[in-house]
Length: 533
Image 1: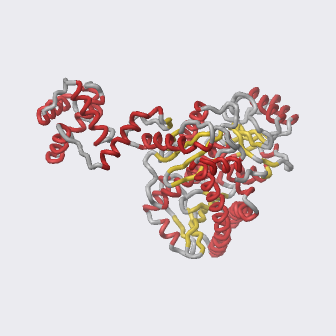
Image 2 (image 1 turned 45 degrees about the horizontal axis):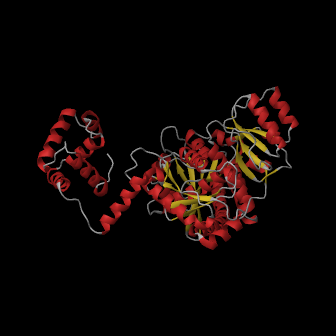
Image 3 (image 1 turned 30 degrees about the vertical axis):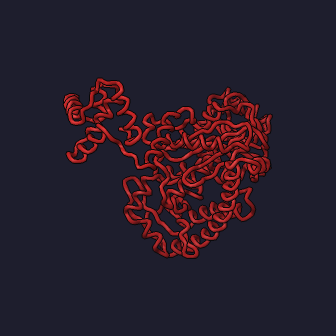
């Protein structure tokens, strides 16, 4: 695995522009950035030399002035704090005395977004001339198109992820600003475009397509496909209030050809980097001597480590879009973990993203790893909720397979309908009972074992009478006989619930006062019908 060697801080500021950062006038042309780190609130982050420090939690001129002095002394290149910048005389003096730039991050952006964007720039600058040039080409191309068409431009892939944008996004509408800040077109916007058939029109046309009406508050746009070798690579979008003229059409067609070559180069380089990460993660997770050799290549030898298994609560699915979502989750998690664990590595295997975290820092322990995982899950909340299973720490990477097994078991529970609490992060120990029940349920299914007794009678009655007595019983058991609470769970009146409870007891011959009967029914429901209300 390679480590970023350095990208000019000027390039980073120019790339992100006024859309994300302010205060670029304090930047020193000669400084290069090699990493992104997160301010942890307890002093200077380790390995701050050459870093852009994300000043999460820094507020007020006194805190900022102190951080500027400390990180400047530690060799950091820039400190980013959330706008509005609290720059008084003490802060201005600290910036003047310290060899560090002070930048502001726009209030609507998140620290995770900023870290992801900066790390993408760093990685592109370290993947060789082809990727770096391709990445820079796209931003330059977006700015060139914006000048000719006089409208804000984005260049997007097929998943509506924004790959590059022009520097004039402040003149865009709210939909565009949300898209650029999130580095992704929000799902409800892309769904609207898809349902209106606009993607099909754009991808099926060799010329730009003008979209006069998309929705309330959304200005007209022009979409142009990016196409090469019978493959759709993405699209160019320009906010334009009227149909493009002949010169503008020609500009977009030519720009799409240039973008296609850049995207092909970037795709080849990204695929190579992804394959390298995937190979290292697979080798580490397999354990044994091969894992030790992989850890040595990554720079941490036989230190303690543990595994995270991350995915979407609803599962990944098998579509190309779902695969792209998992790949993006792997990239985002890899970026996030690098802020805190520079030697960590993450990759997507199937529908799950696995990350290996070496315990090379003095404060790394199970609680610290859980906190970092929880912060990532919380910051990743969107249309698709992220859940993370945490494997136990092993003393040697040669036994990482055990940590992966535990992470997998925890993740499975978090993804299951039994996760009624809505928790997003868990260790195997936290969910041991549910994990055991899931495994027992698997064994029963393998043997074609089905529920019998009163529960089977109720299931058949529900099927033939179009009623939900099983759900009534489940609600009563789950609330320990609290009828008002149980009625609320199944959304019926208390008196109706009492009537159904009495009815089901009579139909199936259930003695609801018998503790053994209640336990048996609860166990059967968990094993054969594990559907949460």
